[in-house]
Length: 178
Image (tube, rainbow, N blue to C red; front, side):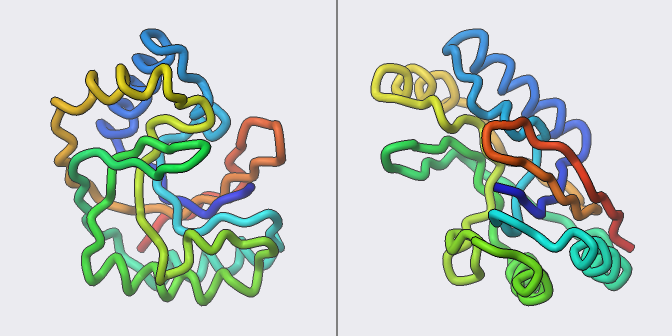
């Protein structure tokens, strides 16, 4: 899957990398490394028209100014492959921006995940996925449950991460807002 994301600014980028390192060192969790950039996602899909995507992201960035988002707590997407994440709080501005970006990007993608459409979207910063299981999830939760993840930062970029199946994702397009 490929994704249109916003990368985290410092110091939060480094804090997430440090959490990934800790989870790998102490719990053997490496699945997150398939997308090795701390971010939150706007949309993911199986294929994108990269030329159209570059034009659309550039236009969207020119029409937008950096804006502030907040995070809080921890969350899980449950199921056969649970995901542990830091939720990004859905402000009215963030919701409107996502809706506009979604409409502009939707014609450029194939196999777009319905989990990211405006009705279902739960913006989040992934901490662990692909390798959480019944044996390690309790220990991971015990370690992180008593930490605070009340962050506030500016979103100032749109990025396309190209991530072919089985390969580590690479940044192909990056534009700055404003």
